[in-house]
Image (cartoon, rainbow, N blue to C red; front, side):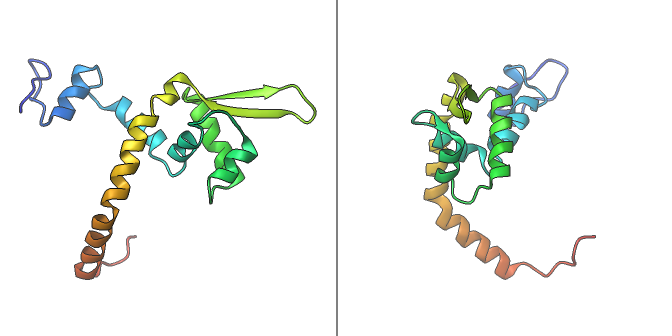
Length: 144
């Protein structure tokens, strides 16, 4: 399928490329930036952990095995900056801070679950492919 981006440019090579261009993201910036955010090691785990409602910092950390306090803090800050998570500070002693998904953040649940399902379903094949590749790959000199 060939999709013309504009009269002076090359035709799109894929439906994806055409869709990006037709939605005003011809250079793919929006896709790259959003995938950078949600494709990191922890963001999707935080998002799906908040699916059932608000949680305090320590509760979030308990539900996400392996995440350090520092990484959870950085991840929450970035998700809040991107408008995917809302942070509420309650004026109490000690202060109580809660996190919850925003309306935009909740729209990530369905695609996140689809991606997680795909990963679980295909992981055995991916793992086998990696093993085959590693067993047959020629030794490479270390990178400089």
